[in-house]
Length: 213
Image (cartoon, rainbow, N blue to C red):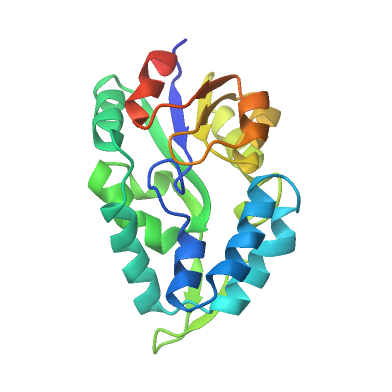
């Protein structure tokens, strides 16, 4: 199959880390926060039940976000740069659709050649001193069903769209008529294996290329 638009999740898909969990680890809150993340990604809790709670616990300041941006790049999944370059060379429009923190994802996107306005994620709000104030609570990506909403918007302008990711929120893209490829190279979730249109267990992201070109 061939798709006009190729959308990637970020955490555990483009990068090996779960960003909010890593911010929690940095602040000594890893076990508490990671349990909430996992429950949401496995479909046991609604995303909105954990999203604000996790950030209220961590309160990531601007320095923490910059640290996470570097970590995303350092922990890039095998084959990401090659995969994105191949897709761009084939005229595909690439988007990142993530429930992660947008300012931390933008440097990774820039490195890969993905346009800033093609990065859909949740903005963090800081005060003038760089301290955490809040997150963009109106963002569709901080609640369940948000990835479907973003995919619906994109599909208004494009006939065919594929979403690649590891979690329950990525499966939501199917509600918007998107094709969904489950990527298990970092975390293989039973729910995604069962419900994705295709599931790729390879550790390299290049394994998705035959399914999208």
